[in-house]
Image 1 (cartoon, helix red, strand yellow):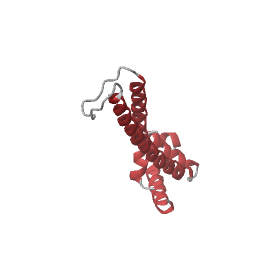
Image 2 (image 1 turned 30 degrees about the vertical axis):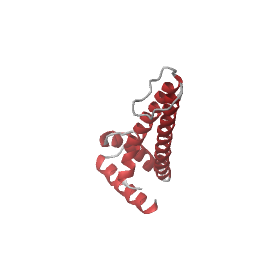
Image 3 (image 1 turned 90 degrees about the vertical axis):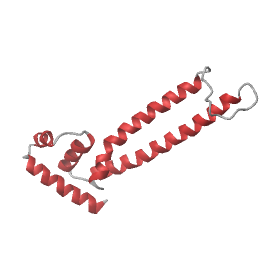
Image 4 (image 1 turned 180 degrees about the vertical axis):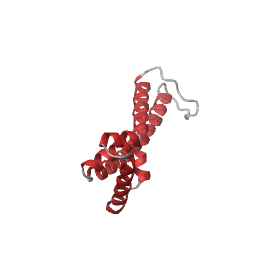
Length: 133
């Protein structure tokens, strides 16, 4: 586990919330019978041809969203497993920094350590995580 991967945690969570919102909006649009037909969809005969094309496009988009959610969950799980493998102090430090986004002074205060000691601990944990995961 690298520092770069740890830093992705909050961004992935944010992206997953956005995707979930997009999925909700997409489903709402599909349930609304007054959904306009997109101009770039192929023309077909029949009353519901435009709607069928729209539904097909929406299902493709929905599948893409679910694939991204799955990939995001895999990385979040790897990060959580790496953090869970640490001792109490290490878990607290890494969760505070990478999951909660706390500043170094706040982490030092919460742990009751000098900020320099927290930085040393952080460096050691990163080295350990790099060799273990």
